[in-house]
Amino acid sequence: MSYATRFAPSPTGPLHLGHAYSAMLAFDRAKAMGGTFHLRIEDTDFDRCREEWVALIDEDLRWLGLDWPKPPLRQSDHLERYARSLYRLIAIGLVYPCSCTRADIAAAATAPQEGATYGPIYPGTCRGRPMSSRRQGDALRLDIAQAVARIGPVAFTESGGVRKAARHTYLPETLVETAGDIVLARKGSGIVSYFFASALDDAHQSITEVVRGEDLFDFTAVQVLLLVLLGLPVPAYHHHRLIRDAAGKRLAKRDDARAISKFRAEGATPADIRRMVGLPAGTAPRSGAPRV
Ligand code: GLU
Image (cartoon, rainbow, N blue to C red; front, side, top):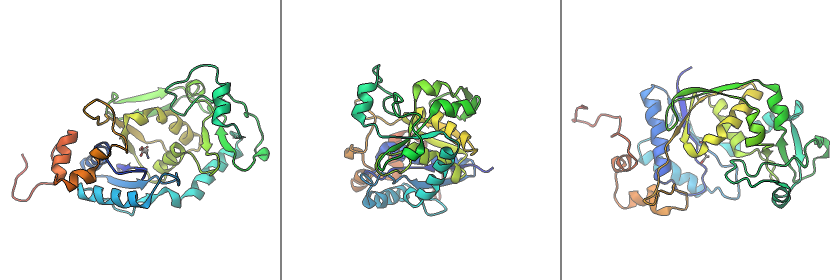
């Protein structure tokens, strides 16, 4: 299968240097492999996503010299496809409705759970509820113990980045303690969780290597579990270092001072941005200047 990767921003703010690094690194890897770079707009959080950010993402990426062969995949156009995958997990009895509030979950949690990637480990209050008892507004959760009981050890390849390039084999049962019964469909909207939609799209877009920040590393095991449960192909993962500010804090969307649009307005060039994030000069030979 030929190499394919993607950049998958959520349009909730302007792209900053960290996004530019991620997008350019993915683009460079695709070029180096003679493969394809795709753009995916992860816009299922209707409260926070804005069209103006989608337009600016497009503008910034093109200014950086990136292009993609097809119009970007907009997740908001694919909600039915995600729902079909969710129904498959429901059909095999791995999903239950949950009406617990955040406060219920916090009150029932027995140990402090700071840093849990998927929020506090769910104490299992609604586990076992039949789908027929689903009320409007309920979230849907994966019964993780049942899910891992269906599959054996799972392997995926980490292809460099900040982790050593290696074939990782992990025992899904560790997810019972580290992730717990994660939310697959969100309370209220009923739309699938973003890590689920993202994994489904990696398969849908035939992504062979996911290039993304190391802050997303902890999602990988659950994403791989979901892909394996659904019989979908598992890509390789390349988690890269994060771009940090002078104080060592990782950049967030609200760090407008680092927005690419701001650098553009101040007269920076794409080559300046590459230098700032520590990427080698552009891959395309400059006219008249032989590459050395
Ligand atoms: N949409 C996610 C973000 O903007 C990225 C998800 C991914 O790359 O897997 O942080």
